[in-house]
Length: 410
Ligand SMILES: [Zn+2]
Image (cartoon, rainbow, N blue to C red; front, side, top):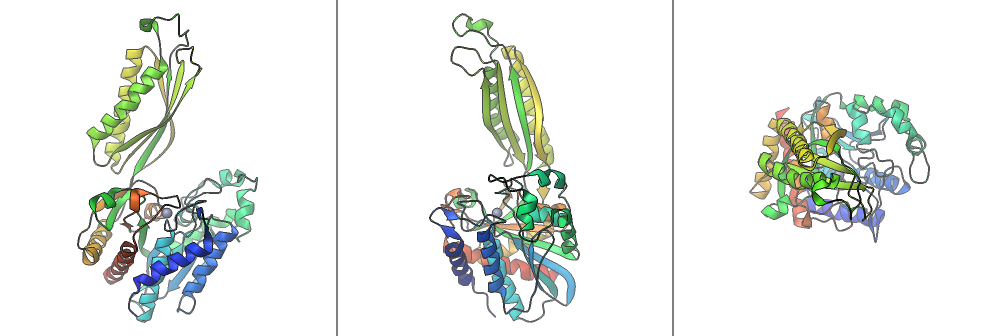
C-alpha cells in the first residue's frame, strides 16, 4: 500500500473539527474532548493487524509485530493546551498512523513497529508536563507531590487520572513498555521561526536544550526619592538592569544557539517615591552543550557580582530548576538527515528549545531522534499555529523514510 501523505493532512483537519472550537484545539488531557480524540485515533487504526492497549500511565499503544521483537517506536501526543494549535503533538501521532498503515500493508516488517500516543505531554491541567512519557521512561519521581496537585476547579490529579483508568501509584509500571525498544522517532512542528527564516520545510533535531533557571535577588537600601542624592544611593534595580543587558552579551559571546531570558523583575517597595531596595529577577538560560551552559551561568554570576559592587548592593542566587541538555542518537541523526534530503533536497540541523516526550525516552537510554517541520510565523500553543499542507505532506514522507531506514538498520 503506497503512502498517502494527503490523507494525514485530511485526518488532522478532521480531528481539528472534532476536538476544536473557534478558539483552537481543546484536547486537554484527562477531559472528555481528549478521550474523544483517543477514540477517534482507535477508529483510524481499526481494521489493521495491530495489538492495542493502554498502559498504566494512560499511554495508548499499537503494535505491529515484526520478524524481530526489537521495536521501532513512533510517538507523539494528541493532548493540547486549552485554545491550542491543531498540529502540536497531533501531527506526530496522525503521521504515525499513516506510516504504520503503509508498513502493515506490506506484510510482516523485519522489526516490530509500535505507535504511541503519550498521555498528558502538555501538563495543561495540573502543571505536570510529560506525564506519560516520564512514567514509561522511569524518571517520574514526584508521585508524592502529584498526589497533592489540584486543577483550577479543585479536582485532584489522582481523581482526574483515575477517571481514565490510571492509578498514580502504578503509573511507573508503564516502564515495561520500553523493553525491547531499539529506536524512538518523533516528528513535531518546530514551534519556532528558524526553518521558516531559512526557507526550509524540514530539519533534524540534535537534542533538547539544557536549562538553568534561577532567581537572582539584588538587595540595596530603600531611601527617599527626593532627599537621597544620586551618588548616595544603593539602588537594587540598577544592578538588575545592568544584568538584564549583560545576559544578551553573554549569549552572543557563548554562541552556538545560546538563549537567555530575564522573564520577570519584581521590585520592592515598588513605589515612585523610593529607591528600590530589592529587585528579584527570574533568569532562564539554555544551551545544547552542557559546558557552554555552565559557562553562561558562571559568566552571569560573575557579572552580577561586578554590578553589585558597582552599585554598592548585594546579590544572591537561588536555583529554581535545571535540566541537562539531552543529545539525540548520532546514527539516527544521520538517517534522519538522509531521509529529509531525499524528500526535500536540503536538510538542516537544529536544537529544540522546548522539551518533548522524545527527551524522556532518550533519557531512558533508547536511541532517539526528532524531525521538525516548519511552523508558520514560529507560532504554537495558539489557534494561529499553522504549517503549509505541502510541508506537512513532506514531513509524513520523511517520517516514513526514516522509519524504513531504521527498521533496515536493526
Ligand atoms: Zn508537542
